[in-house]
Length: 93
Image (cartoon, rainbow, N blue to C red; front, side):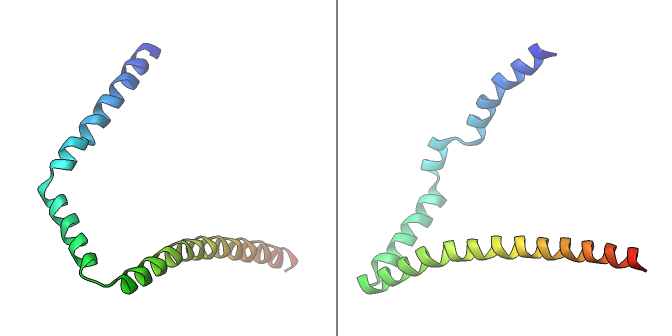
């Protein structure tokens, strides 16, 4: 069993290389067209607009991630407290 596991683990990197073929990704015409169009959009704007968009995105993305994590943890904590208090209330009755 250990030998078959070792053989499988040797095959995994080869399978991953087949899935993520970086050369094919670089040669992908759709991706390069998308990236070039994105560069054109940014190059047509003035530096003030580019800086505003950059600073807003750099500040809002971490803020949104932090907010989502805090919301999730608070929700989980409140649900746990409700279950605990409900169980205590039932015991009292």
